[in-house]
Length: 305
Image (tube, rainbow, N blue to C red; front, side, top):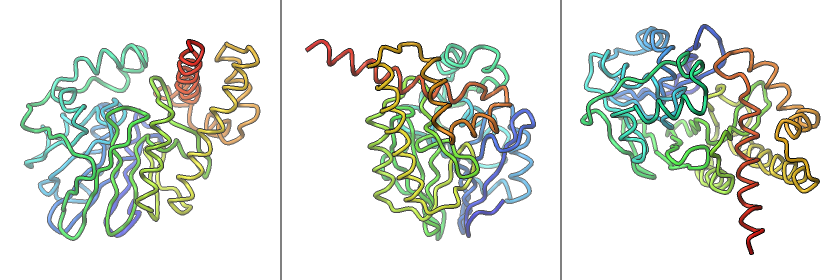
């Protein structure tokens, strides 16, 4: 689906489920660039969709927002399959994990559980020459279309948001929110860092994007700055709610999650429409855990003084 003059949104439909993972193809006059690939399990769908839009020999870059399996798990396999001199661009901290994903895979099994990790698929290794670290504010010229990389830690220390010009669309991966049908909530599973995440949203806002497009799922219809403001406000609301329950003596995150779903209609809606997919069942609860653990760490540090 074309969402602007130079950007296509592709639903990679993992395990056949629609509206779960969006990746974005940016087409310039000289080259094309793909932002994220989705997991290994959806590679065939992605490959078929790409062939219908471009000559695959023109795909010069695969730019990853971050290296988590549902975003970059298929990157190495796609490069090996393409008939092109394609390079994978990633935050410098992620380079070694794309080249050799063994530690990433073991971490995914620990965080997601073996069953979910294996459903997404194990990433393939790839030669170091195919992977390049991308600097903060680095521009990628595709010919009359420029993609700017913005380092945005919080969700992950190796997260990157890409701004496409002249379209002025921010492709935000998991740095901003999970977004469905006008509702949103944070993408904040452990080890989430709230202060860094809020600063990263401010950093994106400085670019004043006209539109925001997220990974889960798709192009937000309201103005970009409005989405960013709402996402920031939602994180702050979650922090406030979790802190209040902790200070009241409620330590069980399951109970805090139950309270959250009672008062946050947006999150309750997203849970209903999204978490029928086994890849993402419990995603909102894990997002609460990231903020919960970060708050406990901060409160623990305060109590030491």
